[in-house]
Length: 603
Image (cartoon, rainbow, N blue to C red; front, side):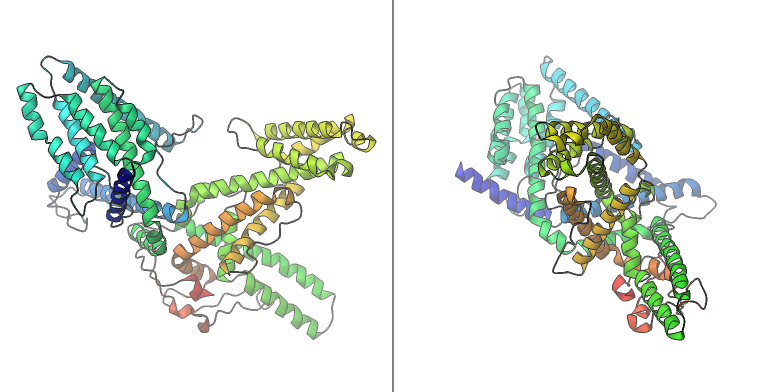
């Protein structure tokens, strides 16, 4: 057994080494359907080859058919962009998630998910199941016929042979190569079939023995189960399933080996793939531009209100020195709030807002959509549970609110009840929380004396329910809104501390959120990692957008200054040449995507 494990380890390492040459394209055999589709694509391309040049441009001659050829070119470009996006996403997942691996079976969409993507996945699954069932039925009828017909059997053996060889090292020949080539010599097996001497069970037994020698220890039990199958068709069906799992095992091991290499070149790779995608997009950064522009306008509005407030406060003071102090103080605040880094940090914080529409998610954050949705859900849960806890403590009173045992038990139950449920609205969740809070309070007050008994007097039950249910108006409820703002500020502050490598990585947990401190710290760590990795990868794409929003340069390269909305009342936002702005000369991203700037150039 130890010898088998040593051979297995060596094979895995060599397979991983070979996969490192193409880290984003795992070694897998190409399905026959894919080969046929590729052949059809090449045939269509050859039919139109005289009218479509190497760059995908359409011949404008009268004999050409521009609409059809233009459509073919667009389809090919879209497929190429999709492939680039998939490779970049795979590399991003491997680098971002240290536990990332391919699952044994694809995750199926939930029955409640009615999105077009979920419906497409269900349709593909149904089509695949129908095709597989038809193939196994044909194989069974062929083997059981008299005389046996092995056409489908040889197709299956050819694919099994290819899978076994794909799991072996490519750089050198091993004894496994020799044995597989010898025992699965399809020409010799066909001769045996013609002579009526082919023993399919012996061939299947050899395949199972080979799999037992090559598979990871975790698959030993599944391979052993194959030896107990007597029906030949069911045996080959089981062999095919276990081989699929073995391929996934090899790919996952390769991912572990190549992860450090991908992490070292992750940002450059993502930037290059994203730039190639933008080359063929009319405005591939439309959502990103709107995202940053809207953030800038919001910051401007906040500064306008702040300026008016400071102006009213200053009007009560007399003298030139007071006026100069007011102007200088406002100018410092304005420059700090409208610095490129501050604008981008504020933009990142908007993705956590209850009002943020995920359909408007910036293109630069598209690969982190699921992480952002998870963060938003967790942040809402943290705020919701904390709001309910504060409300219940306020209604029930200090005597019971000071008991840590009651608070811990109530928090655990509320966290369970706050888990998202597509079939239940927020009002229903809050009503369930109010009932649970009251039950926990009553249970805790039993035998606790008169003070605790007063906390659970009957009048408090209805008051508790009314107060908790009002939290359904999350956007306007003062407690929820305050705690949500504190949660977002905490996450943003944590990301800034990580970015600047502050000795104290995370700030202290804000008042009112201590009930959920563990979940809050976890969310802050995930948010900081997401934001800072995104900033490092896509900073050069954000730089020209922020320059445009700030009006830091004109299209012809001349420097411009952004003037405050109240002319003459505030200082102009000055971005001098010594801050590196003149060194940033990215080409217009709407047409060409060569990026040479960065956020560091702007600060």
